[in-house]
Length: 110
Image (cartoon, rainbow, N blue to C red; front, side):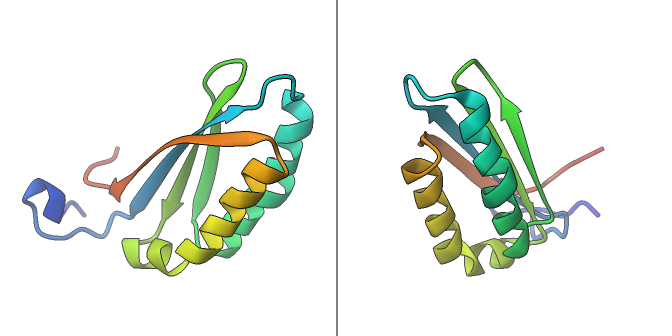
């Protein structure tokens, strides 16, 4: 069901909410070793917080994008303090640096 999202002048939608974060691996860090920890520990933690799906996309030899799908903005906002802890671990333990974030309501999909 397509509805109109406030940011676009449309009025509400039930298609979900996404966050897209971009990350860069520290110089000299091993991609596979560090990514294994993210896959095995950090992604399941996001699912446990209510994310319906989490996808990682390798965008270069040292960068990745994480796309987290949430049932709605409220679910994502309710988990924000826990998400912040996951992000701290990704940076401190897994060797990735957060380089950007985008978030918003889904307004169309096929």
